[in-house]
Each structure stands twice: as C-alpha cells, then as structure tokens.
Amino acid sequence: MAKEYDLLCLLAANKGRVLTYDQIYQKIWKEEAFGNANNAIACHVHNLREKVGRLLPEGCFVIRCVREVGYCFEADSECIATT
Image (cartoon, rainbow, N blue to C red):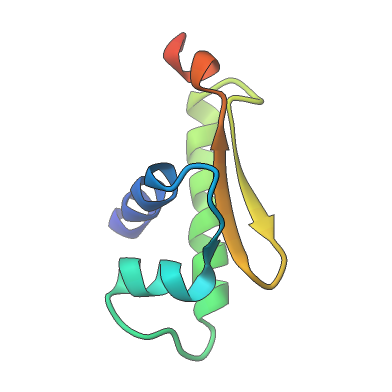
C-alpha cells in the first residue's frame, strides 16, 4: 500500500508527463529495475486505478499506459476540485 501511495504521488507530481518504467522503478523502489519490474509496476497501477476510481467520479483522472514505455497521469483539475 505504501508503494501505491508513493506511485500516486510520483505520477501526480509529474502530471501530463510520461514516466518510463525505469524512472518509476528507480524512484519508488530506490534501485535499478530488473527482471519483471514492469509487471510489478503494472500490478501497483492496477490496484491504484481501482482504489482512486472508487473515490473520484469517472473521467476525473486516468493513469494512461504508454505501451512499452511507462505511464502518464492525467487529471481534470476542475473535476477533482469539486469532489
């Protein structure tokens, strides 16, 4: 759960910017990515989408997967400000 929170903070701080799998892994796990790092990140993103999705109305945010590159957080600031 702490990793999901760290991931949300990292993505939100870089709103609109695509972060690579390596960048994400290095910032969250504090080490070089190896093995199935992409799968670990994907699992945490999946859980994060579900949890935040329950709190915010549909369309307020999206964690967009950029295939074979990484993830990008996009949010409608007006929508979030009113919830």
